[in-house]
Amino acid sequence: MPFTLLLPVFLLAGLGALLVKLPWLRPGWHTGVTELTAKFLVPALLFASAWRTGIPPSLSWKVLCAFYLPLGFLFAGARLFAGRAGTGAAAALAATYSNTVFVGVPVLIQVLGEGSLQFAYPVIAFHSLCCFTLYHLSEEGGPSGWLGPVANTLKNPIVAALLLGLALNLAHVMLPPALLRVIDMLGAAALPCALLSLGASVASLAPGRWLATGAIVLAKLVFLPLGVMLLSVFVFKLPPAAAMVLIVLASCPVGVNAAFVVRPAGGGAQLVNSAILLSSLLCAATIPAWLWLLRHF
Image (tube, rainbow, N blue to C red; front, side, top):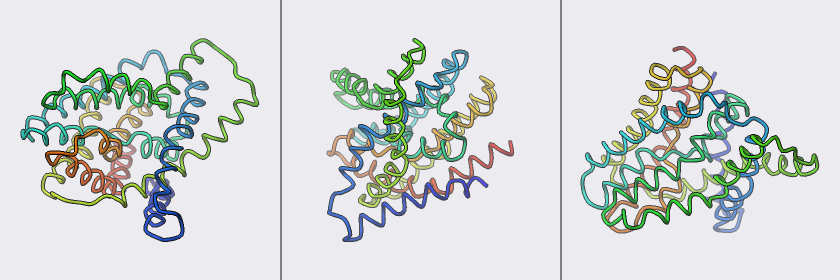
């Protein structure tokens, strides 16, 4: 059942990978689609959903702890295990940074419905901020420049749209119906465009360093969601819907944006690109497996 629900998601991503290899569209078309999706379409979708549903106040801190405590421990462990300067921080980032927007949001809406996003807001809002700051702090010479990534993350359209939608929800601000229709139309285009862009971006990557890449992908697709499951189900005892959302987000492949954060020198960039490619391919099997496990747990 989970794989059947996810089949449209993987087919659209596969179509994006196919289109980038065929001469039907201009070279580099997916760059514009990615920018449009990340700056307008996904923010519109998340803004409208956040404005309508908000965050359950009794769950917010538990949701954050259940997701970010395993993430922090795994980042530290991967950083120590990888060890080597330049590569260690990149490996730790790849092992913990999820593609919450281009994979997580489509999967959640397709499998659990748009209402499930209320449990995803706290994770999505702080995910890039947390992971990129950890990367810069753990990288040699990083602590002196960590304020830049924090400021850039807060200016991210996705984070800004989420925070604005939640603020208007808390303030009980009503929006004009005509404006809502426009926002909803933009949001409706977000999922197919995000998946086409994801497929095209992954198809453009080159693999390498399979042993190290395999260890990172194992941590990302298995260890991180396992840790989130243990905390969300057994420690914080979150509702099943909330726990499932967190585990799906944790089981997403390595986020594409990690490739733009890691320094190109030192081999870290190639390692991250390989992890993005391999995890994006394997998540077609691991995400349905986690969903099946959760439904039968």
